[in-house]
Image (cartoon, rainbow, N blue to C red; front, side, top):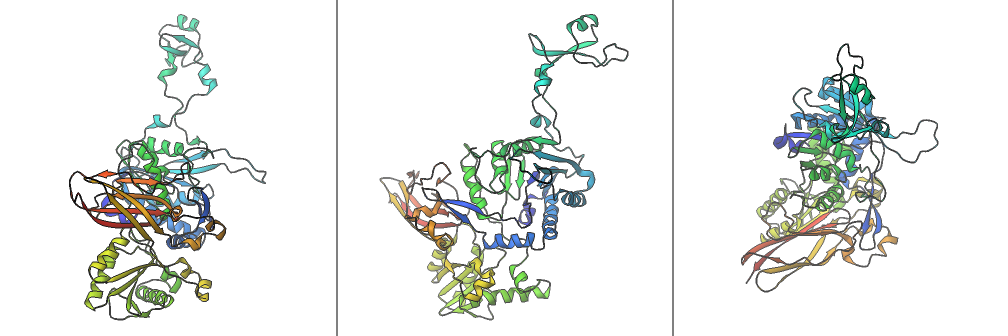
Length: 559
């Protein structure tokens, strides 16, 4: 969220967040593999593990600390007329409300909304908990905030509708008394045509079609997602679109900006897109972003959007937890100890006196990426510059996360500059002392992708996938792995940018698996360029765990 403040402070009209509830909850997800839909459980990534420990490491206290920091950022991101909905479990709502009162001011509290739903009841020694809580706040209560109450009205009950028992050319109506002082019928309802004749001017016809319905209340009866529903993605904590549609419809207008900073399966973003709102979604999990991306692409007429990696996670270093608190002078020491620790596991020796290069292994120099941020293009460029300065021709970069989409691009760039670049993932096992003690640590290369580009007559081009090296097969149980026969089964999504401009990846053609359609085409539809020339084609592949691999190709079209 901090990454957004510079550009979006004071510009977001509606924020809805659904942070994780339960202390110690484990939000692993089941992924499907290949055409047969074999299931495998996805483990947390290293940054997800760190976030999980930061959130729950000290129990409820650390959960509240995490929320407090985010509430301050949410307040700064909201526009003066903006509103916030915080979706929480009833067991934590009292503490969260006190914190929101502190950050936003108790005078800006609007409602505590109970979302009621039905599930199978159990026999307990207390009442079955069948509701969540939505805490509704304004940035400034009297600043002219949006509240489209008609978007949340509900139909009248059968009993109420039965009161409108008369009918004329305008429709169904009931006869009511005007609230006139001294009138014998005052504001009574349920009057008869005889009363209408007897008291002309003191009664009126109340038409059903002129009423909007039952005005919004602070408890909502909305069903959870049915197991057979099309919107169901089998993603933990997924909320129904009907619930979020009410929030977005009431508290924003078309064209306004809506945000969800725990976007999960993308319900808020998908709903905002369908309702004509602009949106921003954030999540720590790459798999959540991937699920959201596929969900958005499945919306007919979905406007173009970008998937960006916004960088740091809360400036709380993993090395600070492992090697000591990162405070003032101790921060640099903790970073130094972390780098030395990873170098030792990789079998490299520390290298002093360099800004970017941390170690040496054989003929290669080594750079260690930070725990709380992805390795970036600028970071790798700095390493390459330093390699050239000291006449080193082989560079190994170890990272937890990578700037989305450009890993293979940097390998080619380094090659052109005379440096052999090897990109290796730091495995999550380095955080497990038992694995470290056993020496069971392996560093895998970033996935390999082989592509075939074919030109037909003129400027027509097709792209085909020929091979994909999935480097996380060891994370899949043997009984599942033994049933996987094709390399393509590990691919969940792939796309082509036909004219990559070294900035944002544009989905010129895209294919992905869904719950209903498991087959994945391995050859793109033909694309026809308007004129001959030199073009850069980028191919992006996302595997079953949400990791993306990209490769660029300089191609002469029409020659």
